[in-house]
Length: 54
Image 1 (tube, helix red, strand yellow):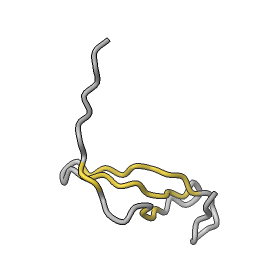
Image 2: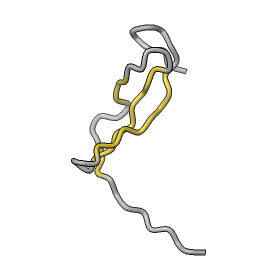
Image 3: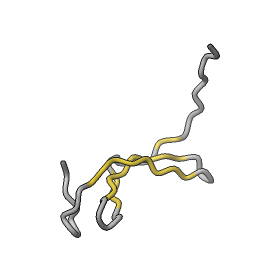
Image 4: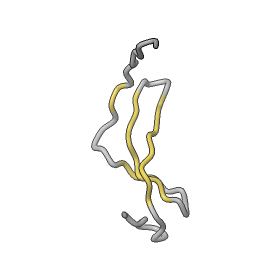
């Protein structure tokens, strides 16, 4: 697992979403201090997924 640069806490992957701009990015978020750093180089556009009705 990765460690936070600030407090040496554990990092977990999260998806940050900007609904106004329609973008999403995966970030590492520290469980201890809440600091975030991007895991991807740039945000991706949000896309709708169609699910089949069962």
